[in-house]
Image (cartoon, rainbow, N blue to C red):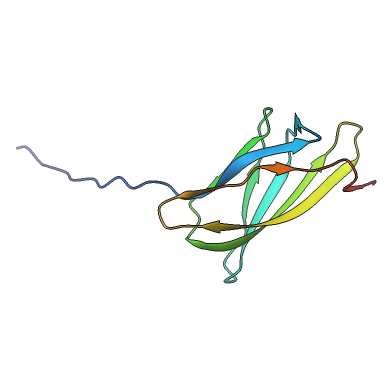
Length: 104
């Protein structure tokens, strides 16, 4: 007996990009995406080359909160907004100047 299965593949959607500090990649940064509509938070971590991706997000507006360690061990923080369209990734490149740091 042969069974046919139909699978519909759809494009992913979410937020992705790269994190930099004065042009250099930021590795191990925590990226938190909070939906403006009050949905649950989603998280991602940047790779050694600074790339990050948070997939599976519903379309809508998001606030991204980034917390990372800078080159001298200082805490880097930044908050940016992004809009995810249906079936697409929002490409968000973020450069955090050393001046936007907080020492712990």
